[in-house]
Image (cartoon, rainbow, N blue to C red; front, side, top):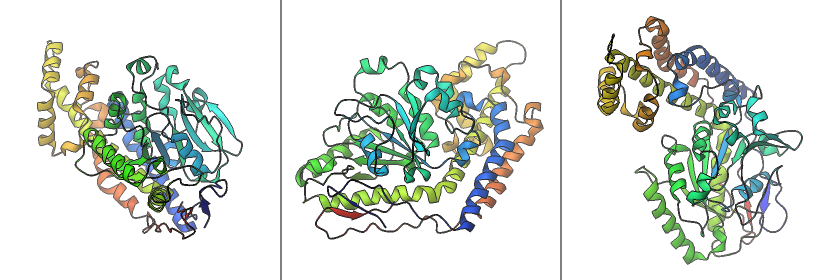
Length: 436
């Protein structure tokens, strides 16, 4: 097991988790192949018939089922997002820029490649096996600020990392960016982990960062908060900073559960404060343990995400069917449409009760209404109509949720998520065994 030394030598990079047994690897590949087939055969035709991609996220492609786990890094500028990636890789990556000013001016997908190079966003999104094809819909304003960074670091064979521009606090910067930072929602739906970074000197959560965090709704289980650069304050200051961060997050996160906040300093230098070093080393080990689980849990997470998508799709189908049923057959379309839009909360409740659905499966009300204003309700497909094959499509969707997916879960290796506890060595305060 490799060790990392703070300040004694340049980081060599975290050790790679041992590959699963051939049998487990075959089972995992089988599950991912079958999930892809199931989506293509059952879910995608329904999504196309109901314009699912217009209301929610874009359609999936096969590469998204086979891509390594992805980690999204988000936070204010200069909190150490890019340095965090360098720390994990044990080396610099193509296109990297680090400085006290806002240096990262683009979204960078750091992935494995035999040769170090960068790929422009437009080329990356049209590649046949790219997991980023859905980002084509964001247009050139975004794609000119998106690139792929291929790097031969061994860690990237097991997971990919997505660096993002620092979220600024000024309205001027937001307006002059020429693209919407809400694109992070597209990433949030597809990544396996979201790391939200702060540092002791940037605890303020701007309006835009607040909006970004709130758009992670539905993906709270993926979010990990990191208080980076924690070795720059002493023990008493760290306690105060931690409390202030928790208070700020409590105003933003719409969840009754306490979010997990890690404290650490992810760089290759010696930890500055010996009093807090043991705590930081243990916390950093815990976060690395979370990252270590990702390759082992990737198939399970793909199943989980597909089930969430299928449940939303099911609610979407019944909701469109209900709205179409309310529309007149001859005239008064616009008047009736406006009535339905104005009473959409009541329509949601009606469908929820009539179909025995869970309220948690329904889409965000405001987003649904915003999109629905622009579409023709009279063109919505009926569940038992010809476009839905007289109800056969919904039967297949129910069968997939109730039978096919649970059957696939039986093939997933049990005990794959077991994680070793990080071990802190006794060589002063400068040495800790990595767990990734």
